[in-house]
Image (cartoon, helix red, strand yellow):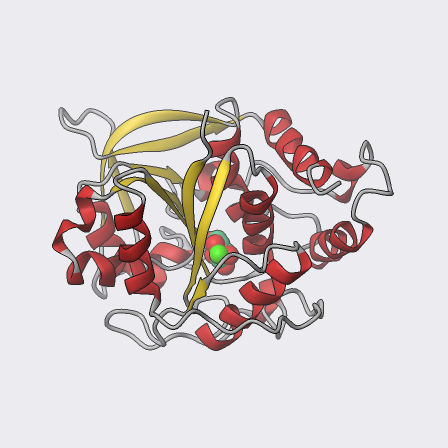
Length: 301
Ligand code: BDR
Ligand code: CA
């Protein structure tokens, strides 16, 4: 089987680091075409530098990084989420600086260019606010026919983390998420209702030889420590593409509530709908997910 062409849209981000690491590690499964960045966990300036530095650490400087916009569709960014991502967006872990610059085109244009070049086979993994995708869908009406699937880390079928009802990626740019969910592109939504059930502990590396890329493992262990061994949400979204056992899905017609009400950012799931636009993650096999993590680090041998 040929590797699946993927593009990761991200705001690195401690858990985004693990998502990118998985996207880079499974070369037989993924052809990582590009990374596009957005603010959220920090400014787009910082998340873009982080993406470039992460790729350097992973020896994947060949992957282009395109910088996203400097605000959400209708709102300015909030302050950096230092409590969960450190002042530098990466748990205050300092990575060696990349010499690469961002690509000379915007994230929105990179999404369209990549989708066009992949002839309808591109899978987009979006693990930050969905501003870039919404801008691209607005600018290029044929884009919805060019993306095979969007895997979303975002939303929840239970409780939120930024409001009682909403998850942060969706809430932060609910207007964008509404556009993406209404696009007609098939969506796999991996939300807090499952990601919270799979904390990532340092002990996951117990079975991995200490000789395996210690500089990568060392950073991962520091990031896990910074997050007090809580869940790395974004890693779980991309893990669903590595192994079918990780997530159990349920078909749904799903839409996003935008605007200023207390329900802002809610992902409304209708599991009885006749026409569905999405698969919603409803259960997680944690052993299968932890195996993805150990296979990932072993692939860096
Ligand atoms: C999501 O919000 C961000 O802070 C994380 O990187 C993740 O994508 C979890 O709600
Ligand atoms: Ca993220």
